[in-house]
Image (tube, rainbow, N blue to C red):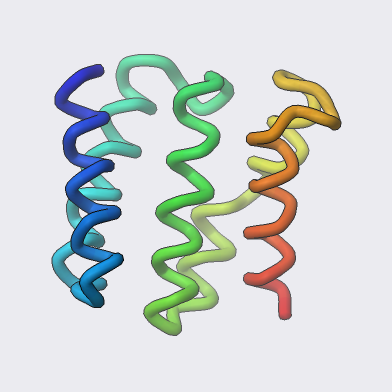
Length: 99
Protein backbone atom coordinates (compact mmCIF):
# COMPACT_ATOMS: atom_id res chain seq x y z
CA UNK A 1 0.00 0.00 0.00
CA UNK A 2 2.84 2.48 0.69
CA UNK A 3 4.23 1.86 -2.80
CA UNK A 4 0.78 2.46 -4.29
CA UNK A 5 0.42 5.71 -2.36
CA UNK A 6 3.88 6.79 -3.50
CA UNK A 7 3.04 6.07 -7.15
CA UNK A 8 -0.17 8.04 -6.84
CA UNK A 9 1.57 10.95 -5.10
CA UNK A 10 4.28 11.09 -7.75
CA UNK A 11 1.56 10.99 -10.41
CA UNK A 12 -0.10 14.02 -8.82
CA UNK A 13 3.23 15.85 -8.73
CA UNK A 14 3.79 15.22 -12.44
CA UNK A 15 0.22 16.22 -13.27
CA UNK A 16 0.66 19.47 -11.32
CA UNK A 17 3.77 20.14 -13.40
CA UNK A 18 1.84 19.53 -16.61
CA UNK A 19 3.40 16.14 -17.39
CA UNK A 20 0.22 14.17 -18.04
CA UNK A 21 2.04 11.51 -20.06
CA UNK A 22 4.44 10.93 -17.17
CA UNK A 23 1.61 10.84 -14.62
CA UNK A 24 -0.50 8.30 -16.50
CA UNK A 25 1.57 5.14 -15.87
CA UNK A 26 1.89 6.04 -12.19
CA UNK A 27 -1.86 6.50 -11.78
CA UNK A 28 -2.43 3.25 -13.68
CA UNK A 29 0.10 1.41 -11.49
CA UNK A 30 -1.53 2.68 -8.30
CA UNK A 31 -4.99 1.70 -9.55
CA UNK A 32 -3.98 -1.75 -10.78
CA UNK A 33 -2.14 -2.46 -7.54
CA UNK A 34 -5.08 -1.37 -5.44
CA UNK A 35 -7.44 -3.50 -7.50
CA UNK A 36 -5.19 -6.52 -7.00
CA UNK A 37 -4.75 -5.86 -3.28
CA UNK A 38 -8.21 -4.63 -2.28
CA UNK A 39 -10.62 -5.18 -5.18
CA UNK A 40 -12.78 -2.70 -7.12
CA UNK A 41 -15.23 -1.99 -4.30
CA UNK A 42 -12.69 -0.95 -1.67
CA UNK A 43 -12.54 2.52 -0.15
CA UNK A 44 -8.91 2.90 -1.27
CA UNK A 45 -9.52 1.77 -4.83
CA UNK A 46 -12.55 3.93 -5.58
CA UNK A 47 -10.72 7.29 -5.44
CA UNK A 48 -7.93 5.88 -7.60
CA UNK A 49 -10.49 4.92 -10.25
CA UNK A 50 -11.71 8.51 -10.26
CA UNK A 51 -8.18 9.93 -10.38
CA UNK A 52 -7.16 7.80 -13.35
CA UNK A 53 -10.42 8.53 -15.18
CA UNK A 54 -9.96 12.25 -14.53
CA UNK A 55 -6.41 12.12 -15.90
CA UNK A 56 -7.64 10.43 -19.07
CA UNK A 57 -10.33 13.11 -19.39
CA UNK A 58 -7.71 15.82 -19.01
CA UNK A 59 -5.67 14.16 -21.78
CA UNK A 60 -8.75 14.22 -24.05
CA UNK A 61 -9.46 10.47 -23.90
CA UNK A 62 -13.14 10.70 -22.97
CA UNK A 63 -13.90 7.12 -24.05
CA UNK A 64 -11.08 5.79 -21.89
CA UNK A 65 -12.17 8.01 -19.01
CA UNK A 66 -15.75 6.73 -19.23
CA UNK A 67 -14.55 3.11 -19.37
CA UNK A 68 -12.34 3.60 -16.32
CA UNK A 69 -15.02 5.43 -14.34
CA UNK A 70 -17.63 2.78 -15.11
CA UNK A 71 -20.01 2.43 -12.20
CA UNK A 72 -17.56 3.72 -9.57
CA UNK A 73 -19.91 6.50 -8.36
CA UNK A 74 -22.73 4.01 -7.82
CA UNK A 75 -20.38 1.58 -6.08
CA UNK A 76 -19.10 4.40 -3.86
CA UNK A 77 -22.66 5.29 -2.85
CA UNK A 78 -23.28 1.65 -1.91
CA UNK A 79 -19.95 1.15 -0.12
CA UNK A 80 -19.22 4.57 1.39
CA UNK A 81 -22.62 6.27 1.48
CA UNK A 82 -24.13 9.12 -0.50
CA UNK A 83 -22.62 11.91 1.58
CA UNK A 84 -19.08 10.55 1.85
CA UNK A 85 -16.42 12.90 0.47
CA UNK A 86 -15.03 10.28 -1.93
CA UNK A 87 -18.52 9.59 -3.30
CA UNK A 88 -19.10 13.29 -3.94
CA UNK A 89 -15.71 13.66 -5.63
CA UNK A 90 -16.40 10.63 -7.86
CA UNK A 91 -19.78 12.12 -8.80
CA UNK A 92 -18.10 15.40 -9.76
CA UNK A 93 -15.42 13.66 -11.81
CA UNK A 94 -18.02 11.51 -13.57
CA UNK A 95 -20.02 14.64 -14.41
CA UNK A 96 -16.93 16.28 -15.95
CA UNK A 97 -16.43 13.24 -18.14
CA UNK A 98 -20.03 13.38 -19.36
CA UNK A 99 -19.84 17.07 -20.33
